[in-house]
Length: 434
Ligand code: 4AD
Ligand code: MG
Picture 1 (cartoon, helix red, strand yellow):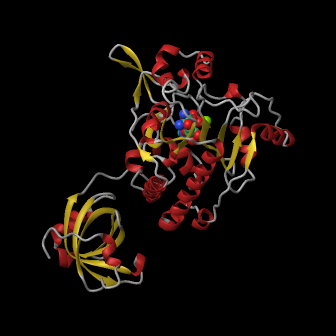
Picture 2 (cartoon, helix red, strand yellow):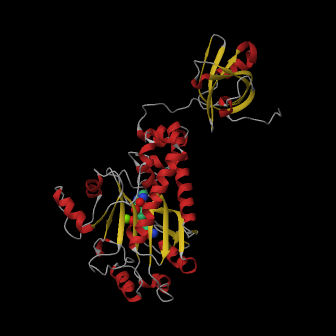
Picture 3 (cartoon, protein in one colour):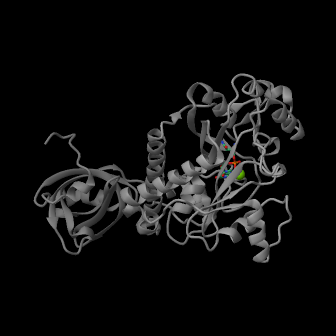
């Protein structure tokens, strides 16, 4: 064995590992010393294992130094895998040598600390088992979505995050000083994706989006990961069908590939495996009728807020689509519905059990005059959007797209209380550090 040949901790649990000598390295989950023996639990990215180190084997000096290694201190161990029925997983590694990489300061994270303290210590809290499981599930979710989109022949593209346009409404954009001119952090890549459908027809982007909303809710971040899809020749029915198949594929992938991590966060994998399309569809008009019957009257033209989305979805087991919102509620680029011109060809996908909006999507207005009129009515400067209006001057075709909040989707899939539990370093109105 070459001195560099470190084995992953999980190698101690391989069927043929008993009696083998392994060289391991990692961090101490915990340690104690009793009767001349050190009991250390060593963790790496593959798992954790109990290591025992005897004073008479590793030597007095190393033993004493090792007694002072703190939780989350780093060590290397050479040792032999043995059976031990009392150890977690039924095995331990009996050390023949131990090297201290970094003894560490006392680790400040314990159970029962306040949420505020834990958010201040987020850079250390990310080492916890629950966090590790969550970041693996998030990586799996992104992988599943990319795989799905690739199979649908939708091209991944890379729009900018800095822009001179505030596309979803100026008040919620973070403004920056762009060399003396106003600039914005992107709220959506949609306008750029619309430009890119003409050469590519089917495109998507996964970019950070920023919202300067002071909403202190359990589902708003000021920075989130936004998956946006834009498709030429697409109508609302085809768009919703793609959305629901994508969400089902993602849920199934987590259930199939990360059942252990799902159990760590408390979401039974079978529930995700059982998710099936199609999802129910109801129009905005039907939604407000249903809300009135539930004792939550909404005037035609008023938005569905958190309370209304909650009431609509609390008893549902699968996500639902709400379609055909009143025009005034939605962005300038949405296509007017020919069946009822008071409404737009748009749909929000709402997660069940009260979780609410996961996706916002729509068909886009293709007519230059109508689009210009709606842009003016929204109060935006038409001159700044002239490049976007060009897209309606050169081969304008029916098209549609949607945006999905990755953390919103993960929050529901993992059934987390707060959206900040779905991102390692959450950005909210009150916090942009650590
Ligand atoms: O509904 P939104 O604002 O739609 C758009 O931005 C479209 N231009 C997207 C498109 O068609 N390409 O945002 C889309 C999704 C929401 O459904 C929600 O999941 C998520 O982005 N989202 C947020 N997620 C976390 N924190 C916030 N503050 C969010 N705001 C929107
Ligand atoms: Mg929306």
